[in-house]
Length: 120
Image (cartoon, rainbow, N blue to C red; front, top):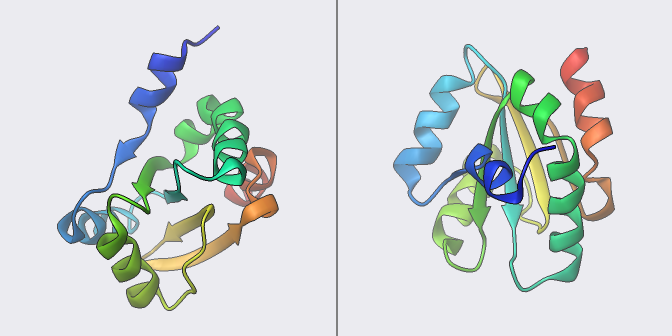
């Protein structure tokens, strides 16, 4: 069984616009998953638990990133603007080949759904 600390190590934190641009570049070679999280929101907490429950399989198929939308709101806004998607929280954005291949928010954030998308 994987500990909570090990799960937290899987999530790479996005704290700057440079981080986001680097992730876009990486998406040319491997899927990149960005999770927008609000630590003060119960729905975000539940969505993160849902993703964490599938983290082992997800991390085999994509690099996993998290943005704290309260602490790093400017970065979160840039991500939404540059990708042409509406900001929501919680929200998952899957990038492949520098494009959004899937995004979902609130109750759409499901580990099994993302695993299904990543298998296609």
